[in-house]
Image (cartoon, rainbow, N blue to C red; front, side, top):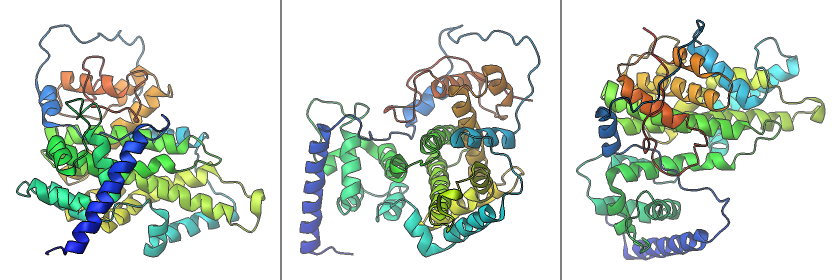
Length: 395
């Protein structure tokens, strides 16, 4: 479609405003959310594929003195929910009022209009950008044209282009076309991921203050694990695996908001406090469905939506993308539990899901994801450092 001159002028003005906002934000307070750089580039996957050059470079793990029982996948995710909600998220039979709250939250997330109000806003042009980014034949100018039409995407693009990971000179990047060239295809996909995940930072935890941060940590680590598994084990689209991991994190946030809003408007007022068990049960039973609805609204591919649907079954997902998503969620949960000292290293090692990834490759991944002081908000690449210790695989 030929865009009229007026539309181009308006888009250029919006881009200029967004660029000015970026320059103003550059000197803003340091507690502003930093750009999110998640997706692994080709050079990083190649680093994983390459064996370690120096023998003995990986740190040796002291032998385990006593047998340690592995945690099954449901146990791992249950402990993650307990951590997020600061409570023992046991199931049971909640009071009638709590059950009514849960039913109302399920109904709210099942209604398209209400779901759009609950879900964090996505850039309006995200579906078009996803399609263009996945089309190797799409020219860079097409990507730049799409980004120009959404000021929020312009802001994300310039933030990422001027981050230490992408910027190669002292001169700031202020041109959209130059930023698109600088980021390349993988960088544009990271831009999409950043635009999708950024709203998690703005969710209030209320009586469960750890919840938003824990969900973000899990989404970030899950996305990185799913990327590697998709690219190196399943030969599936790593960007799709990453985006699905992030969409699942958004689904957790949407369900959480739906429950808290219905507690807040309950006729009993403060007498009916939010129940951790009710929220945990909803996350376990309905997050995958809500993620599927969000994905459908974002116009994700049929394969991506099928991968989300396959997560509702306890058995192994049938599609490669579904298996990578499952792998990423379990590994991401183990990493969050380990970095928060909920489980020890030995338990994490024996609970790691089976994989055909090489030991050295897994060691580098695990060391990065459980590195002391490493958080999901840190800019940079998940595999910038190598070495460390990997949880042993179960046979």
